[in-house]
Picture (cartoon, helix red, strand yellow):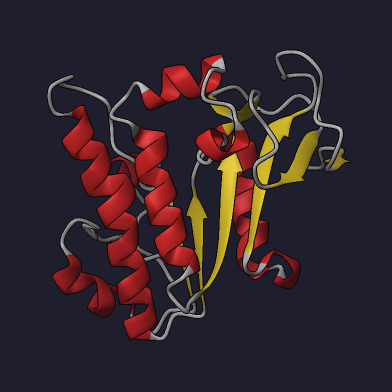
Length: 206
């Protein structure tokens, strides 16, 4: 989890199913040891915007170097797959989407999309099996609409519930069809303009 303290407040203490602990992706020394014995590593890290004079350095450290550190440690520890949560428009420049509101607004925070792309590419070339999930804009509400899934470099807008992202990440970790694949996800009806013409739509289930 991203915060042991928050997890404990939610009642997610140590149990037979979960062991809580701190792992710092910016400190590679202990990562391989932390990953030892695990088949899958799910990476849900991301820098938190704050001081505008430090955002570029923070995004670089967490979303770029931190992901590279995870990839190296996962390979060293014999992890079978790394599932990384990223963002739509991470490859926005190559998509010709630099002028879209989503790219401009998101990348204004520490050039984070550019930093994420470096981390993504490093993971893909690391030799570890991987899955990259790129959600649209995150919202706290419970999911209300069907899930739309496309391949990478398709979506330029949209929103999705954090709870629905968590479900997708869980499925992606164990679904062989997701291995070495980028998927982009959003809720149906949340797009600015026309919905993607490619991809699949899935009804919500409990």
